[in-house]
Length: 125
Image 1 (tube, rainbow, N blue to C red):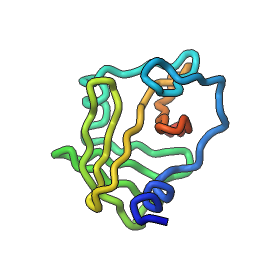
Image 2 (image 1 turned 135 degrees about the horizontal axis):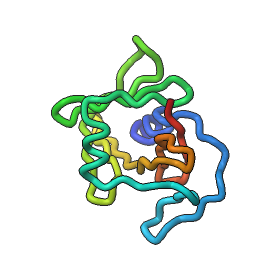
Image 3 (image 1 turned 30 degrees about the vertical axis):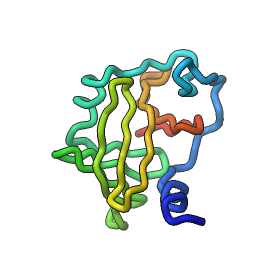
């Protein structure tokens, strides 16, 4: 397995079960009731914050658009730089040149949820 692919596989928290989703015109599998963010709203929401997923892993959106992902507190960090796209996506270029893009939405219950390009959904705490 290529190192970049292995990194992507390792950096994904466990997904939730599918929830009546269908790819939109832009390819993202949003569910009924999902509310998308505008670029500036999402950038403001993430800047300087730590997003914790249900499995305890965390995405750190640091100053200067620096990014770190950790599986657990005190564990290794996978670092890079992040950018918020005009469509409300977040793309991370890791320091090893691996890259991924995800979409954050507020689900129907108002919970911040990350959707991967493969359609997996990860609720946050």
